[in-house]
Image (tube, rainbow, N blue to C red):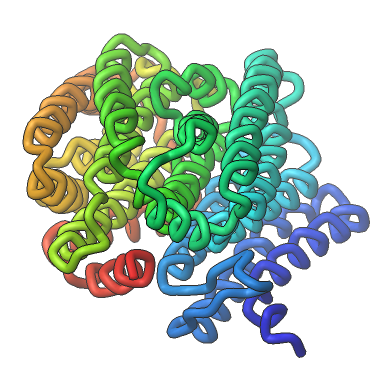
Length: 489
């Protein structure tokens, strides 16, 4: 069998699992369709085991450089599969209570996971674009999946219109780069830019358009206008996937493109990204202060988190020298750790909010009143997650922000790190407002909130991991260091 096919077998297995779910949905009676999320869960677990066993030490390109299977892509494939499993757990109760046609829902969600796996492996611009479009089209459908909800319909229309516009910008940027450099492979672009002393205006325009197109995917200001409305209107598990799953793999793609392709031209795009980082940090956190809808608050908080990660991209220069490689490796380590920390805490938040929504049918900040009395586990996990997102000890969010901010400061951007700390302090205020609702406001309904056993186990695991890795980050730093060196080398 072709070795290229073997290396892409995990993606083929996820695609096969999606078609299996869609096929079974045709034959299962409605009363039995609750097995579909658990079939998807165990299928993804099997693919995850396969990836860890067979791809752990692989570093090889496939199909003449269209994709790269290495340690960097490995950790994000593991993330995509593991987070997909968590979304299946989150969706099982939510879909049963609130949505119709579960087979199509889980099948399309599996295609989104497939697209995420392809994105993090892509080493050529058109391959990355196709993967982005597969993920985008899956999200367009899932955002509008609650067809009897006007907000879901509105969110779907806004998302597809703005998404199509951003895709056109991205594709035009890719065409500019190809027209001026004659290649779309990351390593070839890197070589051409390294050997050139003058950047063609068309190449600069192409890079700017690529930044704009990808800025939409990561919800960077001023390309963030879709996020609050789409987050609010989408079904809660899909909001979680947009906030965490698609954002993390989009950043994985961004860092691969800028490190493997555009790094020699860093002086041309660094100032633009500094402006994006500052705007994204400040706008996201300041606007979150006045939100009364919890999903909109989390949308703006997520935008603020994007600003911290873009800051890491700004400080990634100098990897071509030995000392620059060391500093760039520290920055990338901080970025990867913060992506992991953000994912853990945000996943716990959305799992808690979904559990509350299934009972109360409310997603405003006021719906959090007295939740700590009605479900102590949810109250504890929400509080710990908010503290981690803010960057307070002893949680992993503190450790990740310390790594990232100190690494950025060591690259000569001390003022940018100080601004990020200020933005983090702003976030503490609006998170404390929600925590106040949890513990200090009496609930309207005193009845207990019954959290499904699968969700309770997931919440406990997330809480333990957030706390343990906050104290002992070395457990994951070896894997992160290996991924960083794989990308930078």
